[in-house]
Image 1: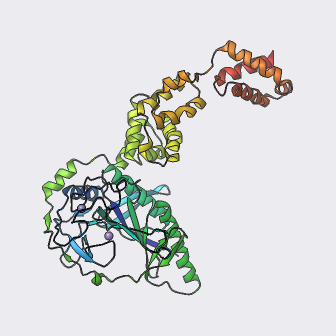
Image 2 (image 1 turned 135 degrees about the vertical axis):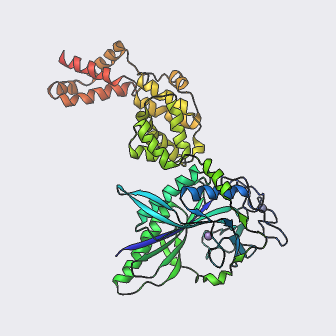
Image 3 (image 1 turned 90 degrees about the vertical axis):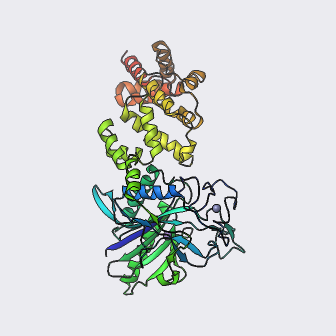
Length: 476
Ligand code: ZN
Ligand code: MN
């Protein structure tokens, strides 16, 4: 039974200074509730929206990167519905019928999947405003005695991306989303790692069956879980001889299930019409050409470049280019340390591990790239061991401490003085006579003795010298 999945993705344009139709700031994550508001985003009567042109520029960048056709005219429409998070009782959005056109239509994104590449077609891209945010003090609306509304989010710019139903598994959807999120990061549209930066609605069906829309999924992990849950639910219905009902469901993240939600409005219930407060804006060829000539390097282009110029594996290049700050960090560190594959290895396995342990945001990274480069060159020159490097890396990354300073003040330099190591080996031999006898017969047992010497120095002894001295003394 083949599954058919299309998604509607809302990307919050959080990398602009002000909201879509007013000058209120967009940094609502850190702001006190209902501070970033004005008559426009509170929907007060008589207030008039004014378009933020930087959002149009960002939408144009996205359309160009996805090879979408940009409509010559930007028409904002009113989409009517009644909900407490929408004080005007309509959302300013776009529509693609009855003389109204989407911002852009068509286009595609190729995703790398299972060793091959698959093309996911884009149906349209629209600009619209975000409603306010409702919160329930008990988390669950049914258990909460009241609800609270924060209008800081009201009027935040959103880019809506609708795909054709070209995906067949939750893994493909995830691959698509990851690539789009990387893209909007590079295009300076959205910081995808901020809470609420994107929301996904998925249209899911089993071939031949009715389509179910699962709404409002807020994280990559939930996207996979929600789609898998819904596909299993539909397959079970079909296997039991039933038929799937066409409906809207929502994802209950806490319980890990999809549940039937309110009966969905029909298109005509929204009473779409062009917003009389916002006359159509002409999107000229000149404007598009100008945006096009100022496009930043796209993530997949950068990944290819990393493979070609630095000899990285595809996996390494993909991880390092998955966020622009990380790719920048890598290239800046390379100015101070010349071995790209050693640097890539450290960043992917150790550096990112530290960042992720502290929430995954680049904001926790205080240490400049040159310091990480310096650390690696100390390792290459034999000043410190890899163990010591890993031990002090968090202080360099999170606290911007100087590697040289840490090594000196904490006495962490590698012990490569032979006379010191000889003494330590003698001590270990005296303390472990049985292990010495074993090692004389069985060469593998030498590691135990080496381990004891390393332990005495808390990992600071130069491992190659220790091995050599232990081997020699065993032969004596
Ligand atoms: Zn406002
Ligand atoms: Mn929408």
